[in-house]
Image (tube, rainbow, N blue to C red):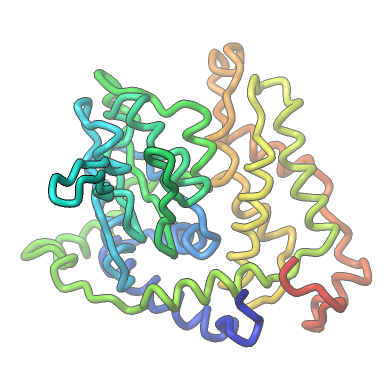
Amino acid sequence: MTTYDERASLADLTTTAGRVHRSVEGVIEGKPEVVRLALTVLLAEGHLLIEDVPGVGKTMLAKALARSIDCSVRRIQFTPDLLPSDITGVSVYDQQQQDFEFKPGAIFAQIVIGDEINRASPKTQSALLESMEERQVTMDGQTYELPSPFMVVATQNPVEMEGTYPLPEAQRDRFMARVSIGYPSPAAELRMLDVHGGASPLDVLRPVAHAHEIVKLTEAVRAVHVAEAVRRYTVDLVAATRSHPDLRLGASPRATLHLLRAAKAAAAMAGREFALPDDVQSLAVAVLAHRLLPTAQAQLNRRTAEQVVLEIVQRTPVPDPSAPQWRQAARGQQPPGARGL
């Protein structure tokens, strides 16, 4: 078991995260908040779904994040004829050994890029379920552990839906957060012409962090303290989605856990050893919206899941900042045994 002394300090975390952020932002122009969310998901040991129109840099963001870390990377192009065994692996009979030998699939990497994930069949999409949740693959009764750190970065195009298979609720719920990159500003697009006009910046991108550093950083994130009031606030936010009249499916308990882990990662990246309600609020839309299903009436009224989450955030009471625990946290103190909660 990793002890606190073996974990990276918050200073190490902010320094390493800053290097990775600058490296990725050199490829993705004018989208610092998107890059920061991708880093938050990585340090929170989650998976990221990038959903946007073609040509805005979905795959570029995934590749830039992968190349900024010195770790194993595999890219899977999801197509209708992709088989589950192409992802998880297959057992092949070895005539010399007179036994079956397991050939690992593309999922056996530390960062897996799934491009256009909604173009594969539901059967193939479901091959990711065990890997993303339990970080292992079970084949022919044998369980194979996946490397650490492990992160799936999947992309999908929401406008070209012909011949695609929308991700089912169980699959979307495995992704900690969903992000849309959006179009760049005119100034950022002009800089992009200067940087990308001659050659791809990915060609000169070099790793600025190692896989073992990321593992230590995730251990540091786990140690971030979350007060009882913040935990209750997180539960209240998620519970409100289950009773909202504009939603026919609310967020799951897994969503509560993902929101708390992401808030801890955001707090650590900000140099704090404790999470605040602000951390939870800033990540609520990214973590919760893609898991929600609006009612038919809400869709007719053009009410989106993002709008519902923002409304819930505005209506849910925030813990009193004058409480003694916040004054204690502001002085950088923690109650005994707080680390690791």
